[in-house]
Length: 152
Image (cartoon, rainbow, N blue to C red; front, side, top):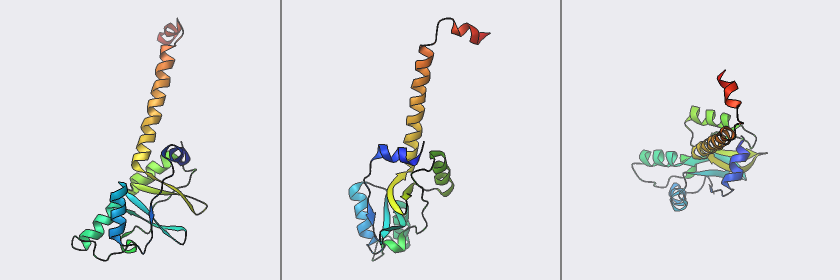
């Protein structure tokens, strides 16, 4: 399974911010849309990620308030990225290694979407459920007498 398969099921709604936006405005957008991350875009290119982790770290660093902190001061300027062709197992490995919960999907320098750890886990569970159904159907339709050869 590839990242493109996950995005096809997930849909294409993207939420972004710019490095110049205030952290308070970005956090408000995340709260309003009930999302855990924003892709940071400058001049049409992905320059970072802002997740609830960075928002909390910047707020704590600022004594518990947003103050005048910009997205640029809080964002992760080196986020993990993947392409539409990246295999799901590779995404899982990368996310686990870096403790990343969100990953922008880039194709020819263009933002195609964001996949979350939740999206990856859901894809794995859905795949396993499908495989389970197929195996159960196969076993249920097992030909008469076929079980004897398997015992031998």
